[in-house]
Length: 252
Image 1: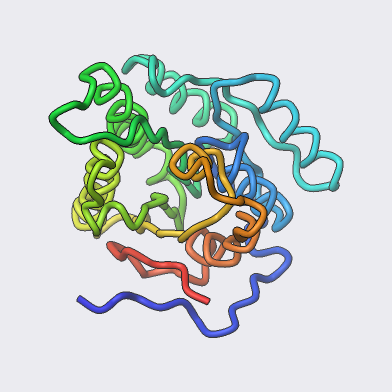
Image 2 (image 1 turned 90 degrees about the vertical axis):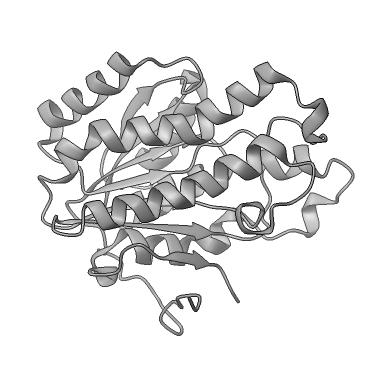
């Protein structure tokens, strides 16, 4: 299957996400923070989900300072969250907003880079919980509020490791491959709903995860996460209506 392409020279309109409610996981750093700021700048009401309240408050303050719609904070540790925590999240979204128009599944943990035969079982379980199980539970329980939107977008952040089966990336690579499979499965199961589901591989950017994977690399030479946001906005916004089940790759 050919790789889908973004519209040439795409520029998101200033009010692209006006009156849309978008939940972003991993919203305190890297791509998640950049996406939260970009979505708010384009008039979305953003629900910031992360495990560290102090960092969530910092992103909240940055958004408010720009005059964008007031965001919401939802502290949740995806590694330790139980099923009831996801049910509660969906219930609160229903009570506070009445629907969910966008879900960006961005939170991820690298784990360790090591051969499979030496991979620590507890690390394996933790990576799978954050990168895959949490996304399954979020999509499962948020389905009820997503389907109340007239045009909802679920977007997974993928990685080249999902396709390349990169040696030594163990649980991370497999969890990302599982995420792409979950994306395609949901796109087919939700074909007759207002919900579209896609994933995007943003390529190499400055992030905590990248620094963990390549500690000797000069991060200053890498693109900033903000440089990828036009593509994220396109897939979260109405101009990608009707596109579902696709794995996009960021390209210059």
